[in-house]
Image (cartoon, rainbow, N blue to C red; front, side, top):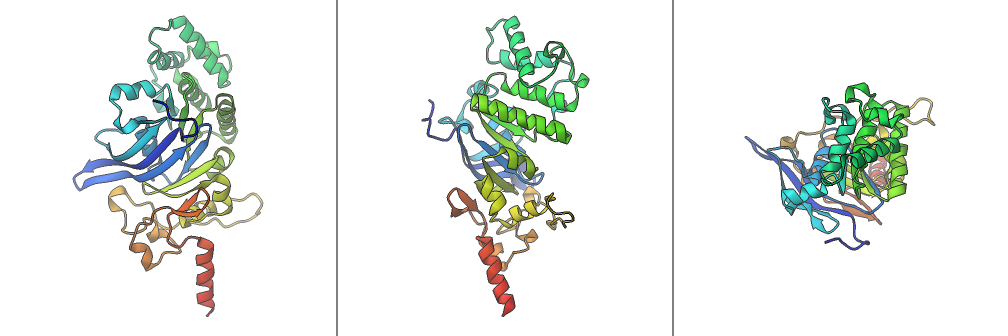
Length: 340
């Protein structure tokens, strides 16, 4: 049963995805809460290994074995995907929820033509549709993603296409059944700047035409600035800050977000020293007690080791998981203490 138009298209509540090991269950996604409205673009950012891709695979019901969803809800248009039977989930996956995977060369089957693979994606949801009609729609999908000579490219194999064209094929396949939600996992990885801009322009254009929602997973804050309406910053399996995109760049409240922004080169500064976040992301089995970021945090105090803070409201639609937020007030207090 569909939810009301005012309700979020996707609502993730307390999602926990775990993998069994000899040392017990390790959480790759640990208590994530997110919402995506219809027609909205949500950007999810963070270092490699923070849980971004595993979050997307959890939504798609594609968590690799022996991993499993151990808790929480994934409500899509009124239905909890975590509780759906496998067959019902297959009916949704690819039709109403589609995904552009991170690496097109490994996501496309090298022994089949790209046209065959797009047709198969549609045939899975429309088994009675004649092949000629599906072929025509597949060629139209290739043309829609601005692939030149789409009728000829339909019969090409993945190795005959450039990286940018393979990425466009993946987008065409994902959009073939007109999904309501598109999850794009690092859609511009390994693409040069020109092709990256073309792919992002294409996603924006298709979103305007169809009104679909997009979850954009990336480590590139520049991509987020140009695409997202709202941003969730992930660290060690959790969301540590969530806010409208303008607030993330103009008024970041979590030290990790500050570190990510400080590591970006700025064109307006001829010579700028980039900020380095010391240390590295902890593996799932070695997450520190208290705030997960405190061993790397320049603002860390003893209090940070005592509790893992939830997202605290910083204003309308802005939350940060830091006991020292607002960060500006904390920095002013430290400066006053040092002055005295």
